Image (cartoon, rainbow, N blue to C red; front, side):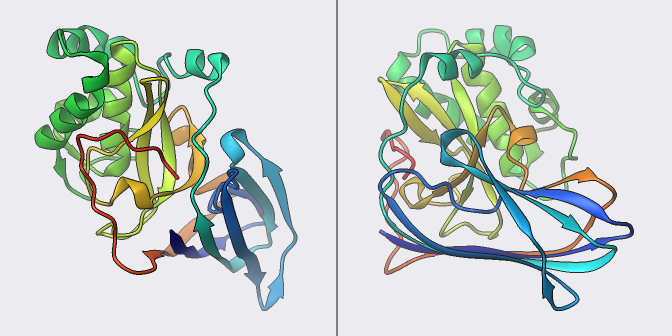
Length: 266
């Protein structure tokens, strides 16, 4: 599968500021990635430092001078990523509650709601449950809302769907983690958030929004929840996001997606 992805960001820093970017494709084995990342301020390219993160992700740190700057990332992605490795420490971390996925608070509800569901059927059951009970409404949630807020409010965007799926799965003992992805076919097009859950001996994708075919997704960053996977985070200073535009397309037709099947993110 050939995929072309990218992001264009325009930001303004009132004072010199340091930011961390997570917009680059994770360099997983099996993928061939041709890419370009540039941060421009008043016509000059700024120095960017790359740091490797978990699951082949890459975080880029840059110091922005005061004033407007532009961030441009483009990548051509060929091939399919190898199935993610299964690590016992990773499984332990992703069974636990986290800032936005309060599985300890939701566990009694999750246990009652999904009692009797076979382990291999849990992903489809949880995804269908969340997808039918939430409404996709941009602006319905805030940046500090977590799974409990989403459960009570009944609406949100992809990160809210993902946080509720995380909390429900962890609440019944299934390791689950959030993945920021490029999502060909997603409408509205933006950075997308999905869940990877460990069942049947491997990590498989859950997307309760059903906004894009799971087999077309491209991993960017992986973590406990959105706190670990933000595409732009201010480390020092003050940075305002003025504009963002995300691109994600596949060559040819989008693949079909049977939501009842287990799919590996690749």
